[in-house]
Image 1 (cartoon, rainbow, N blue to C red):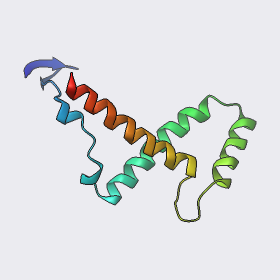
Image 2 (image 1 turned 120 degrees about the vertical axis):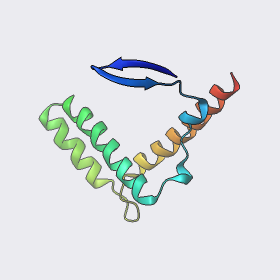
Image 3 (image 1 turned 180 degrees about the vertical axis):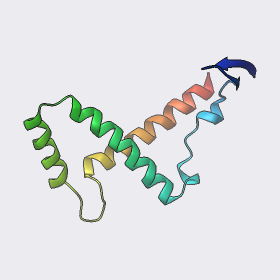
Image 4 (image 1 turned 90 degrees about the vertical axis):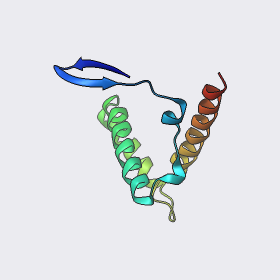
Length: 99
């Protein structure tokens, strides 16, 4: 731990340990997961949309709406991507702990 100043405020810095970086999905509630997912999706979606011309953006939005699952309030490709991301994060975490 290290006392320092950041933006003219006194703060304490500490090194993140591997367990601080671990994503524990089973420890968050359904509501927390949905709120987090909604926030991250909005951030990524807005950033992605800013890179598109208007016509492309409209087609992209229509495609997202068309591919919605009846049971899951997310496109199937998004669900698959999230599962892959969680798996990738777990691998990276375990690799980090090994070093």
